[in-house]
Image (tube, rainbow, N blue to C red; front, side):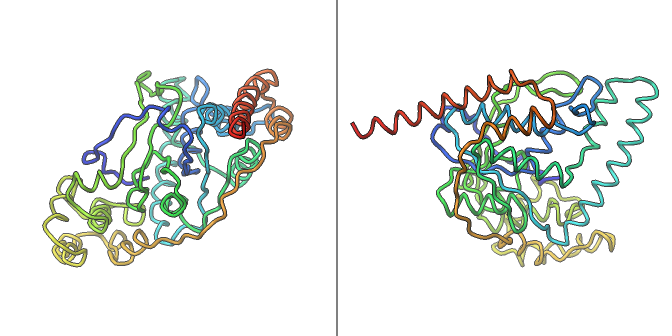
Length: 345
């Protein structure tokens, strides 16, 4: 679902060459869902092999990451572990949304309405265990570091980017900022166009620097977390009734502590149904000190034969196309090795 603070976020356009030589943590589930929702056939169904197994996520992993690594960017994919119990609410909402989308998709299919089929099919996507494990397998075969977080992937990615000198976190969601990522990078793709039901729109990579963002808003990290809870997070999807992004910003700037903020909001919070009521202290703690751990960051050696075994042999990708892309990656590696060698002469 993701935190919605788009109206108050100041974004800066990012040119890919700025990232050359930098290491980025990727919110894996966020990016994989992005591949599953956008890499689709004309009728909106995901790419599939002859056995009917979905391959959209594998195609996205392969082509996008080779393009980014060819730009000199190092990538660490961080996968979600066990989510907090409070996230059951958002999982329930997502399940209900999928059921609604399923009914609308089937109706569109009956009337052969390709536009609506494409629109609703993207809401039916789910990542299963087989897809996740194969995604990890392909990433490592490409020479990309894979981290299994103990809890929320974006929280671990934010933690690693603070503690290990990693430049920032790649995600479409703003939650990483609340978890303390120093830099959030959105729309990280080589393509500058995004396909929507209405056609193509231009999408530019952008970055949000946390310290600049907080300075512009005139708030600190605790106030940002409080703002997120007011607006609504994955732990309290409904937020506080009648409180939007701009109003939430005004409220957190009026008080100097989270307790005072939520004491002032008590009457409005009492308006929530029993199902939507929440303990702000629990949610604040989950976002301030999420479950994370230290990792020894290591990048595996690329294994091109393994890449081809996954894509070509298992799923019927074009061997010629795969070879062409792997050659790009190989040239990048040779060029890097040569530069390192030249340092000694």
